[in-house]
Image (cartoon, rainbow over all chains, first blue to last red; front, side, top):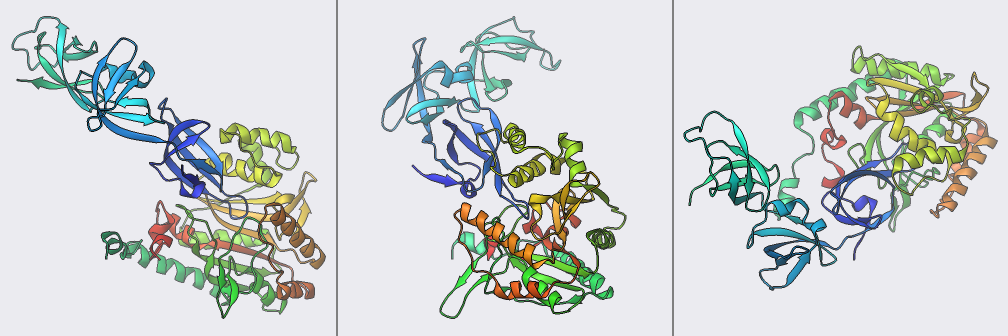
Length: 189
Length: 320
């Protein structure tokens, strides 16, 4: 474990702050000409995603957080846990729904995703930016309407509901941006 | 040679910024010289260091010398004033260890000057003139430290008790830490609440709390509160200069040095040997005067509208 002083805190470092693993986003050194120095830091709580502004006394120290991002394959879910496998060691990890969060909308079995481990336990799951999913259910397509720009809701194989163009049919495969939930295009096999 | 080093040979500032910098520095010199202020060059490497508990110097230690890179030319300039130099200015390098950031570089350029028989308000007026020659029509706003606190925080900085002050601070830090002393609490609130709300442009704040006096004389303000005759200058919300109506009473000088020494002890900082020459000069007597130290790099940074101090330096600390 490493201990960082306020002057070592750079964006990208993962540290423990008030017993929570956090990512340093910014660190501004503030010092009046006469007077005590301090550090204004912006951090993201890696568990909740919340961004916080904090002020630390100069010279204070924070411990590094044992947080690592690992690419893993999503295996399956059993209703309670989601199971991931590290493809090189075949080691398996189970993540609870809190850690999986919104990633559950986008993950299909066998997909590769980033599992953030905190003390070797999944903390968050980040799906790939783009995934390919099948439309399970949507209103019948308006044939030929590829230009009007209208949209309709579609239920995907993962259960996620997104807006798709009117011409799409159930059973078609589409590409989705997992960060925005936007439809990107049709995938032709 | 690694790629990193190879890329690092380039200056931090664009050449055009260095051209502007050179012009501004020349104007600073001319402005003061034209007014009969004598330029003096004093040692940057001295045998003694500053007593201020919150300023750290670089120690120079080898077989030939044991000394410190000066954090300001103050003590040498005061020796000159005591010797009858009259109005003087210094334009050169100063060093402060550990101060690195977008507004800080451990090695920086300072303009410090003293006006004999002037009050701090006369000196503030001269600073406003100086800045207005560099940034025409920037104008200036002058307010007391107390008014700034009342306006932005609704508290009187001279009357509020320490525990109330700490409560205000805790609501801002967002964590358990809060400064222990009145001085640190006020600084904290100023930097975090008032500074961001100051108007852009040139702002003077005067009549600082007694605990901020450093080497400024004390007097009573209109409300009958004991305050220090210290002022600060802000340019676009950035601290630019700090000035005093200088303390001349040798006994009080000694008390202030002792206060700094106690603070250093409490902070477990190295107690530095007293600068006997500076004390001797003060004992002989400093003429009544006002003095100010101005961060030249910050001034240039603001005039050229740059986001970091390194952008107007030929080579920054990281490139030395």
